[in-house]
Image 1 (cartoon, rainbow, N blue to C red):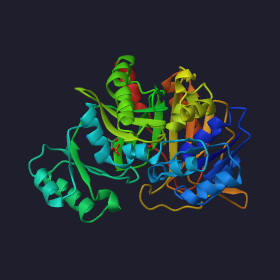
Image 2: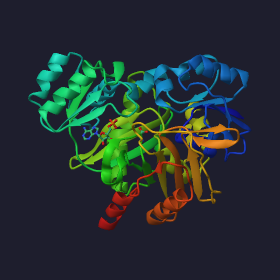
Image 3: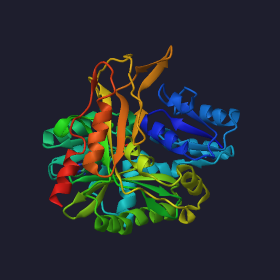
Length: 424
Ligand code: AMP
Ligand code: GLY
């Protein structure tokens, strides 16, 4: 089979490497791909949001299947366009991707179907939003409605900060048109868990749980980033909690989307907070998480291709989805200055990876045969092992064998999870 994967980050590299484990995969094209992915796929360049380019690439290369990985092309309707041309896809259609594309939509869905989430109000009128923040409980959380590269969430400790947040989103358009509508919600507390799931619109199969580390610096200091490292499984997510999430969150969400005439096919990501009142949904993503995928897929023992085809055909109930009992850790190596200004173009030295080690390239280009840094998050050093402490140790040992100028990483990925294990 020939497969086209849309996207060009560490997540896509992990998806491509996993797909290649199935012997039926002859060739993979990546649009755009990147300098590191080029070792595993034919990289077409261009832009992941260019729908006509994706359709042409599928046609010209005569591909059998397309995986649309990032949020923006999904929200723009890339799957609808590809399916209309006869290409089967992994990923939700536009009317289902809205579960990530609009926070107002997802909050209303949860309210309508009784799915636990933070209490909230939605505003399209700035004066009404400003009046609301004068009386709401503090801290409060102000969110831009639309996609904002994971950055459209401001946690406000004071009324002044909340006022500024509303003004900067609705008037200053800090996140562009994504802030025309804002959701203001209750501040929740508790450990966060990411649960990615496969769903064909009827059946939902959760993957192994994981934990992201979103802040740039150790001890959750510094600015929010796309994610600085991950571990799986997440020790806070016990079998009891998993069972309750299945009953109160996962199945109700799949059924709600179907009832709304928006069946969700693809990977539905549940961002959960384990609050004192039970698990609640912080966010839905309509796609694999980055860098969650880099720890979840190495633990998948079944064929990813087989599962993705089953999702697209509506046959997930009859398909094996098996995860290993091992643990995984991924440490992101970033360019100094990320998530703000950083330099690029430094040569990257990669060691040979052992069987339980993987290097997923996120931001790199290949120039004259040399791999050069080309992004904030440059790559992920991932490892699997019998248990979490061993996986963390191995991932850092791998990260320490990779070199480029200006590299930095958090040194505490997984430490909070280890504490949770000790408390058990
Ligand atoms: P989101 O983009 O919605 O995942 O939000 C980014 C991060 O903001 C989450 O991972 C949480 O750490 C935090 N956050 C979002 N909503 C809330 C909330 N209602 N209460 C507390 N923290 C939140
Ligand atoms: N790691 C969080 C996300 O992919 O949105």
